[in-house]
Each structure stands twice: as C-alpha cells, then as structure tokens.
Length: 301
Image 1 (cartoon, one colour):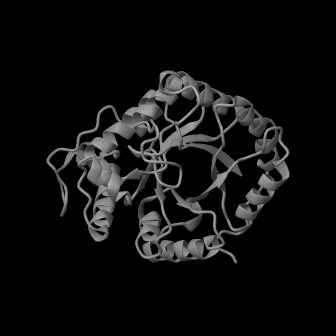
Image 2: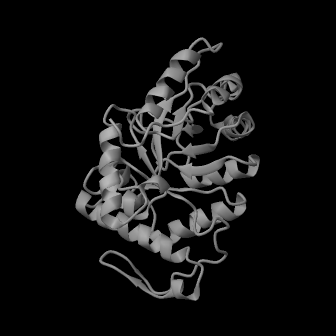
C-alpha cells in the first residue's frame, strides 16, 4: 500500500507570514519520510468540512509549484480540480508545466465540482450538474489530445462547450503518454464511467460502499473495453498517530480495512502537520508497516 499526504488546511499557528516556510518544511519532511505523493485542494476558500470559509486557502497549482521546488521524489496533484475552475486548454498547460518543472511528478486530479458558493462568490460560472459532467468529459478529451505530442494533436477541438482552434502544448509533458489522471468521486452512472474511459486512478470516500463502487467500476470497464486492473484504486483517510505514536495500531487497522475492500493507495490528512514529528513518525512507523499490505481482489465483497 502506498500513502500520500493531503494538505487541506493552511490555517497554522505562525500565520500567513510564515505560511510559505512552514509549507516548505512540511513538504520536505513528507518527501524525506517516504510519502508517495503530496496533494492540495483546488479550492479558493476553505471548505465547510475543514473549517470556516475565511480560513487561509492557497491556490492549488501555485502551491504545488512551490512544493515541487522543495521536494525531489513525491508525486504532486490536486485533490481535486473542479472542472469549472479552469479553461481546459489552460489546465492542460498548467499540469504540463508542473510536470516539466517537477521532473515528471505531476498528476491531474479532477472532478465535476460541487462548491457553488465559492464559485458564485468569485464570479466563476457554475452550470447545472448535467452540464458540469459534460464539461468534465470534454476537458478530459482536450487534455488527452494536447498530451498526445504529435502534430495531429494541434487539430481543432470543437465540442458543445469548448472550441479550441489550435490546442498546441509545448513543451510536452515529461510523463508519457501523459501525466496520470485521477477522477474524484463515486457517482455510479457518470463519474465511475468517466474513470473507466479516461482515468488512471479513482478516488473514493472511505466507507463500506467501496466494494460496491469498485464492482460498478469493473462493469464500466467491461463496457468500454478497459482493463480494470490498470486503474489505481485510492481513498482518503486520516493518519493520526497521536502525539507519540500511541494510535499506530488503530491507523494500521483502518488501512487494513481499506485494503480489504480493494484500495491500493491511501491519501491521508495529518492533524497539525506543522509539528513535523508527526510526519516523521509516519515515515518511521506507518509507511514501513503497510508497505507490503496487498489489497483484496478489487471489487470483491
């Protein structure tokens, strides 16, 4: 099992003046501790499940570029980009830039978006959910075309919602054939169908529904002729080992529970990550303890 770090809260005791240096310390420590990946939210306000909207929130891709400069090995992505927040051609360019500058470590994490208040507040159009899913699929198609790296990829792209006259992407991404794509969400009719057709990974909430969701994903893969095993199954979690590692067994138990449902990679929130000891303990105790943890047959009950 691989573990990633999800940094979803930037309201830290030292305040905004020290936010940059604190984030650098967290990222370096996580990278050195052996976290497989580091993720930030692509939100502009704090989201309701993490705290009040006015709490500090960094723009996701700027933060990832900063993290790329202070790390060496961890993969980098958003958990996840709301499709309405970026024009597709610019999104492909942004992720390509992150990939090039990080030495080939970028992921595209993306979803249909849900935060209407944030969008309306900042003047971002927020169409009905049907249209957001249409835009999500068209965005995935545009990104894949721009990452093809051939002259043919520059041919015009025209769909219901987007028209690109010449989707040129230079330099091309270092990761070939393209930066891996993770689609967040467990919607059974639309989201998991898009995972089967376009994505390299899914991301599901840590609930007992996971086996059923994965079985539905398997069915979508069969319908589109995709190898189900090629899709990485990921979930969210909290890595709270306590102040001195007293909760290690409980966290390992939770990760075994996820593996038993078919999860291969877990992206976790760490309380008070600015207390770097908490990240170091994960590297010393948790990551080695679950490194050989194999998922059950994905989708089995």
